[in-house]
Each structure stands twice: as C-alpha cells, then as structure tokens.
Amino acid sequence: MRELFATLPDDPPSLPPGYLDTVLARGRRAVRRRRIGTAAGWAAALLVLAVLVVPGVQLPAQPAAPSAKPSLPDRFAGYSILTSTVAKAPPGRAIALYGYGNGEAFNMFQSLVVGADGDTYRQVDAMEERDRPSALLAPDGTRVLLGDDRGATADLILVDLTTGKRRSVPLGDPVGVRLLAWSPDGRHVAYSAAPVTRTDEFGTINVVEAQVARTGTLRLLDLSTGRSTELPAIKPAWTASFAPDSRRLAVQVGQTAHLVDVDGREYGSVPLPHGRELAADVGWSLDGTFLATVPWLTDGPFNGTTGGDTGHGTFLWKGGDIVFVPFTAGGTVPARVPDVAQLLGWGSAGSMIVATVNDAGHASLAEVQLGAGTRRTLTHFDTGSTCELGTQNCQVVDLHLATGLLTDLTVRSAGRPQRGPWPTLLNAAVVLGAAFLLWRWARPWIRARRARVEQPSQSAH
Image 1 (cartoon, rainbow, N blue to C red):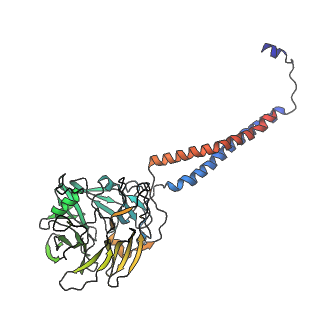
Image 2: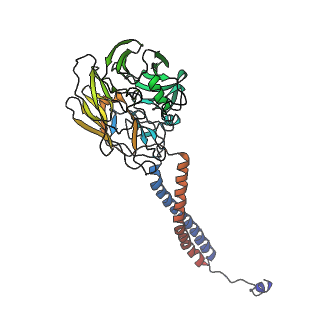
Image 3: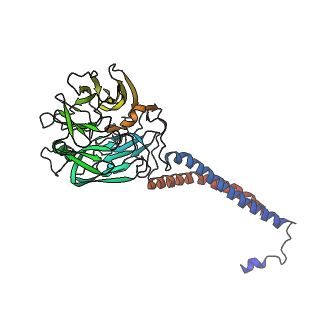
C-alpha cells in the first residue's frame, strides 16, 4: 500500500467547476427515485392484495335493520366453512333456522340462521356446543331457544339474534328436553321433559329425543318469568301447536289432540286419524278452524308410532301429504295437500308454506293455495356437491321458519352471502400469505428498477 500511495502525485488533479455539486445532486436524485420506485411497487402490490383478499374478508357489521317486509332469498347460499357465528357477529332477525351439511365421512353439519332483511348467514354456535339439539326459532325471528342433546340438562338457552347474547332459562332438576312449539306472541313455549339415562334399551342413537318422546310430560314455559308449569296428565306429549290467539294449544298424546289453555286447564280434545300426527309447531290453522296432520315419519317400536316428529333430526327427503282435521265432527276442511316434505307455516288463512323435495333430491319452499292446490315456488336450497370438502351432496335438516313473519313474506333476489368476519387466525394467514406471494412476484421488478435508477449515479463517477 505504501508503494501504491507513493506513486500518487503530491497535488491531486483539479476537478471541473461544480463537479461535486453535480455528483451530490445526482446521488440525491437517485435515492429519491429508488424510494419512489419501491413505494410504487409496494402500492401496486397492496392494491392487488386488496383486490384478491378484501372481498373474502368481511368486516364485522351491525345487525341488519328490519326492513318494511321480511323476505326470503330466491335461493339459499351453498355451504361454506367461513360462515361466522351469532356470538361474533349478530345477524339480526332471521327468516329461517336449519341444519345444513353432510355426515357421510365427516360430521360437518352447521346450524344456520338466514336473515329476514338481507343475505346474512350465521352459525348458531350455542347449538354446536350442545350437539345441535332440539331448537325453535321465535315467531318474530329474533331469538332461538335450544335444549341439549348431550343428555339431561338443568337449563334451556335463549339466544338473542340481534345482540348475540345468551340467557339461561333454569329448569330445576336436570331432565331431557324436546321443544315442541312457540306461541305466536313469543311468550310461551311448550316442551316435553323426562329423566334420561345414558343407555337406551332399543339401541337408539339419539337417546334424549327417543326417551323423552316415549315418557315426557308436557310443560309450559313462560319466558316473561322463566317459570315452567308441568301438566302431568299430558303424557307422553308428542307434538304440539299453539292457536293463533297464543292462549290455547293442541298437544298430541296417542291419537288424540288434547286442547289446553296456557294456564294448564284442559277443555277438550280432537281425535286424530290413525297413522297421522299433528304437524309440529304449526299444526293449528291460521283462522283457528282446523288442525293439520302429517304421516308418521317412520314406524317405531310402539304400535307403529314414532313417538312424535318435532322436526328435530328430520331431513327434507320424504314427501307425504297433509290431511286436515276439524275441531268438530263433520266440520268442513280443505282437501288434502299431496307431495309435501314438511309444513312450515301459514301465509294466510287460505295458504300454507311447505317444503318439497323432487325426485332428484333438490329441496325447495313453496306457497300452496288451499282448495285450488296451486303452488308458487319461493326459493331453492343448494343441495349440490359442496359439502364435506366437495365430496358429498348437502342435506337440509331441522328446518324452521319465523312463522310470525310469513303473512308479510316477500321474495328477494339473492345477493352475495354476507357470512360475517373470518376467523382471526385465518385472516392473518391469508393476508400474510398473499403479501409474501406478492413480494416474491414484485421483487425482480423492484431490483430491476433500482438498478436502472442507480446507473446515472455510477456514470457520474
């Protein structure tokens, strides 16, 4: 190094006038260009990230405000594992409550509510925590009441769909519960209760449902006080339906519909045809003049009866007919309605809302005009192969409509499903993953841009 420096002249060569200022200006300009290029690259990457990711990441939203009239979508959305829960993002009032999915290889059923005022879908997480038990949707669509399929329970859970909050309704000593009917005014709930054991002599899988159906005693719950009144004479209570005035109800025991008021007094009875049972929750006609009956779902071990079909665990797959029974012998009733999978409620005194299933297994809802028998299709369910990770067809089970909203029901064009916010970890993983891929994609462009910007600075030397 000493020899090298010794060869240098004592006086350095003079630089051109303004040379240093020129070099500094070019250097500062190169730095600014590099920063601007990098910022532009990341801005473009973030723009692409927003286009790709944000449509799938729905931010928490307030519950939908009630519209002038409740509505059904003209088609229900397909299955999605990204549907949020009632607790995380309350949906507002609902028009439908149902189970959706398949259990061929994996049990991936979801308990869903669908908004009455928009395309809102939410999982009822309280139902999942209790093994998707017997449940009812309030007539006004704002609440869900559920039991417990895990065994005897000391309380019912009331879920507010407008706030996501839960209320425990004590029952006293733990019992098995089947929820039967909710009064139109929203105040009373009829349910059947009985002690249950861990084993079943008939080998029935659904122990709570089967045991309570055979031995359960009718109880009337007043939601305004939280108190239940037991009616020991009404046993086993199979199915039930409230009158339009909310002060009376019909409860089936054997082949008889017992007529009871909400104070627990029995004032009459109506014989039901053999092999038929009162339509669960909606069997009392809107004008109060007759009862609607459906066939027994399947033959059971007790004189060919099922012990009552409350709709719990019932798939929309088997079509039957609806036969009407007058309160007085010889009374006039409408003609039977054929090809019905489930009676869901009443659109008016002269029409009913039903579920139907065609030969291909596709489920839909329709309004049937009594007497004329004409039908108007309202909506369809997506029963395509989107369940169990795309390997199985989807099935609909435990379907309920908000019966108090049906007289004003309209049908809306289905929009993009609003499923609520994705899980936090999934959001983070998607954003970070997309950012990494975009960085990998943009890195060569940023390097090339930086090299072009630096060339003028190097040539100045």
